[in-house]
Image (cartoon, helix red, strand yellow):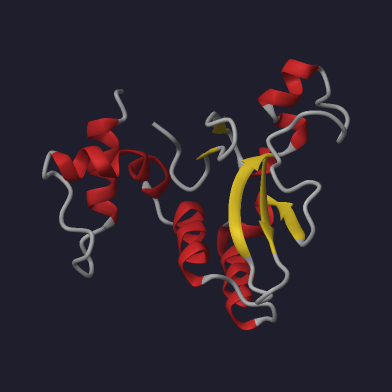
Length: 158
């Protein structure tokens, strides 16, 4: 199992990001509505399995887990900027700053970074719903940390 709020799955390669220092948060911002969107948690290029396979982990050029590298409106920073209490404050500021963030996507990245067991449990929501193990996600308060931990433990295969 992942270490809650300390390890994440990379949105590009699917492998585990071992710590915030090995991760990167990227998103887009720009026309037409100037809303931050497309939040992605990925490996920093130095830790990207794709860069290591290509032998480019010591250079920002070459393959990596970044997906927005050459797209207009790309914004990003080290994952550590967005973790812990200070990181939560940075994420909350995104809701007040211009441009603002797409609230659904923003809420998901906050859950992934700050809610224990969310990152692992979310991989298994469909299975848990099919088994009727997961309470109705539309019920307010159904997704508790206790439930998330139980889903992660039951479906992670460990």
